[in-house]
Image (tube, rainbow, N blue to C red; front, side, top):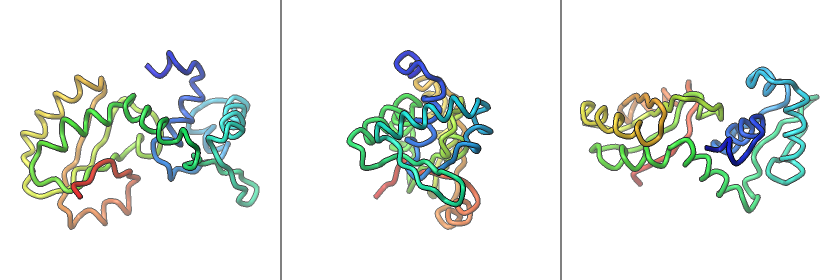
Length: 175
């Protein structure tokens, strides 16, 4: 759907990279290897997004790192559009509110670091979560978001160790 509104595939990749997770930082050569596109195409889009104020940059050594400008008036709107495009909102609505003693839900895997993926990886943290019921809810949610959903359930005391070694993005909390 996003491709019908934004015709540049490179721009879509950059928006996903930086606006899904506001803490993501990257530089041109890293984006080139990740996207598999020419540096020129990426540089043009980075410059456009930076001149529009949607991205900020800082020089660290000889590398120019880019990051989403969270102070831009459209940041929250773009972030929400991307979440809806990927289907995170529907996943949260269909799964997290109905599975028992769930404490937190994290987005992990490719989407957590801003890489578009046909798979949504979720980390569910809680106790006494009915895995059979979660599996049924996941199947229903997959129909709404048109993406494969994988999940991992861990106990709250396992959270810190898991998050240290994996990229993650908090998308829901009970508190």
